[in-house]
Length: 169
Image 1: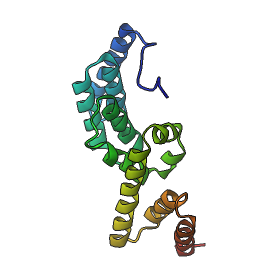
Image 2: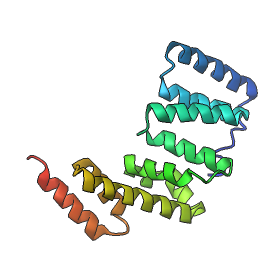
Image 3: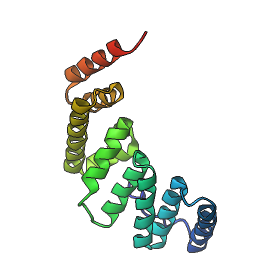
Image 4: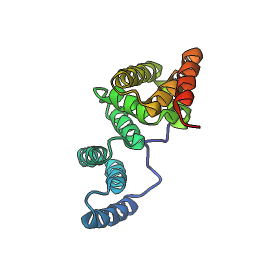
């Protein structure tokens, strides 16, 4: 979506007001990862990229399993041509929430950046396989099955059959 990162409809005054309100909330609770994330986007829209990045990093540290925050980091990195950690953040989003594969974000991203999408998914699959070997976890197996569904439906079904037989009736 070409408008995803262009927040031109909002004027600077509106963003400044939003910033003020979010900062007030964060004074009351500096560990509110959602508002840190939201404030990061406000600062990003205002062109304060360093502050935005610092806020997003804090949000991710507070809730490292939040796929939305990792997707936001991917978008920040894309906008700033910073590809060093982009694949890792997208892979984390896949690992923690495989349903990201069905999102409009992913459909657009994979069209525009097919290599990055494929490599990120491979990193997520490899990471889950490694983690499952160390910790035989049914939730992780279900996530892995979802990630494998398109490329290897037979393996995905095998994993899901394994998961469902291990669950209590």
